[in-house]
Length: 348
Image 1: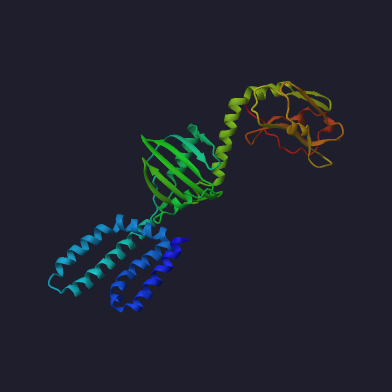
Image 2: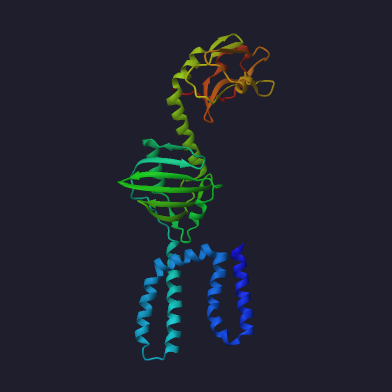
């Protein structure tokens, strides 16, 4: 707020001073460009800073070279003409080099085509992370090798990185004794918006062009799902087997024992769909009160004539694991003619 007051008040005061002190008008006119820069910086500061960086890195050398040549070629002219020519050369060289720089930035490049991925750790905006196995690294390597990008010359990616509302994934890759870090902001299932790429600490901002590169939310979310499932199965497969082995069927009554070794936060779901009704759940109340380790739980399905499907699954860390296809244990007369395949066998 104070900055806005300063930007508005100072020029007004100076204009008033010019009116009452005409002899200083010429001096104040020299300050006019400064005031214009201040106002532009307030409204378009990020753009101006980025353009200045582009000028320093891509244009400054050629501008200085052109001015030096023109300075010597025009030494016979008076200072006014010399100054006008130097100004035109400065503007022309700057405009031309900036134009060529922006044209070059439109070119498609494949910055990862030469790298062989050895290991990868992926972080995401939810706060968790996964390490890819050999097969996943090979898949990622194939995706990266075929990923085409453009240089994000105006540095828009770095402003997205500061936006905590954006979904992002960070890839920390070890490849050929180099550390590659990529921050990706997916837009949809098959496309992404911006990528921040850092190779051995040297950052360049790139934006994705090839929307078929699989760098989208679906690719990453499936990757995390697979990793979480593999991790859960590895850590809790003994508990899963214990629950499966404890399962007993007695006509229309079924029971199981809650095993030891499960994490603190889990749910056990027994879900089915009768042929003549909507989906039903059993023992759902215990997901609210909590299942007790070592206790036997039972339920009866005799009040239903037949089922399209009926199975038991357990949810850990937001992922469902189908453990028992109860449909197979139903009496034949309770197996619906039109079975719906919702159960997927879990390989332990």
